[in-house]
Amino acid sequence: MRYPLVGLCIAFCLGIISAACFKIPFSILYLVAFLSLISSIIFLKQNTKFNILILGVSFFLGATILKDSQILSNCHIVKLVPYKSDSVSLIGVIDNDPIYQGEKVSFILKAEKLRINETGSKTCGKVLVKVLKKNNFAYGDRLFLLGKLYRPFSFSKGEFNYRNYLRHQGIYLIFSVKKDSIVKQLDKNVGNPLKSFAFRIRHKMREAIVKNLSPFSAGILNAIILGERQNLSAHTRDILVYSGTVHIIAISGLHLGIVAFIILLILKIIKIPRKPRYILTILLLIVYCMLTGANTPVVRATVMAIIFLLSYFLEREVNIYNSLSLAALIILTVNPWQLFEVSFQLSFLSVISIVWLSPKIKSMFPEKLNKIPWIRFLISVFSVSFAAWLGLLPLIAYYFGILSPITILANMIVVPYMTIIVASGFSLALIGILIPSLSPIFAASNELFILILFKINSFLIGIPGAYFKLPSISFVYVLLYYALLISVFNFSKIVHKNSI
Image (tube, rainbow, N blue to C red; front, side, top):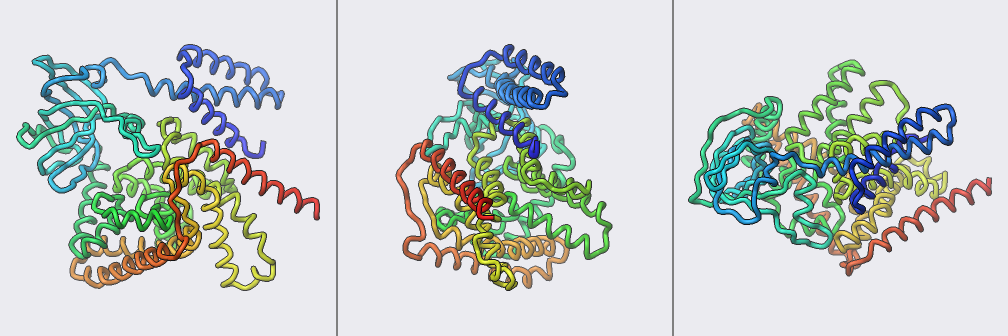
């Protein structure tokens, strides 16, 4: 098989989908997966039978892992809380960097002890805490909280369901703490030391950015390099959504790629040998992942970047499809529910679309144009942007109800421009920490770069026909679109072969 991991990944995903759609007894899944594995070993030398059986193993493992993720321990907090309860007390440790929005603070708490109606018990599981007063909270704080526990509301916006969104992160309950409720700090720094260090650096970078930039520019730069989007206005988000460049404020493969490129370039300039260079880059990307909060999309992008870097370190030929499949298998093994997240689907599909379609689109241009350097560059940028747009068009229309033809041009401009913004943003943050007196020089350039970015986006969405709002569409049309897309480009490939 040319792409063995691709087949395993597809079978694994189909197993997850089947387990989510159908009620299959857990014991049967384990038994069938085990029997398929034993059978594949028996038919090891019979390629066809072995391949079919190993795909079956992957399918049933996917289904088994999803079912296993639904089984909660008896001490899990969701099993100890009635649907209606008065005030309860909860002791636990803050497991992320708290998010401040005005007088409200929210964070994820790893529950340790729960007390309801004078009955206390040890517990486990994660809870989303919302505090209606501005205390100084930090990752690793052990807290005593008095408030009310409730299950998330199952409200939906389009295809987004808030309860499912939290459940896919292992969060089943929300803990509300009002202004007059009791909040006590019992201990400090009981979390992961490396994570604590990363968050301290994050706070210093945020402080340097906020101190030296206008609120608008600071909000944009914090979103781009630190993943903090809570200070962005609805108007700013709308501009990016309509232009199809909203991905720049969500740390993704684009950001990790730029950061990895900058790190590799600096290490190469200071004459670090090739293999240590890749190892240092991987370690720094892990630190950056923690620094940005280690949210699901960031972890996903980091895993993908590390796999690609490891292939270069091991001096293996990079097979993009196998590498992507391996990244997906690792991510879904840890949390199979990510398969149903919009961000997971968009991030992987965008890369697949670029790798598969951009060479085909590029080949449609006359060969003589590719001999002119600046035209070759424009053709490459257009091919990548157009390929991503074609690949994501139906999903964006399905989830967000928007069709943005201007996205092709917008990303041709914005994606290369992001390298400048990320590099200048990190420079400002680091100079602000190390040599604060030089910060104004770097701040002025950042203000200019961010202003230009939004002038470009605002101009583009002002063009007639730049974007259209669509009514809701059936997922059947999404599947039909992809079937047609695959057929068209495969047909062109067959015609090309016959002409030769």
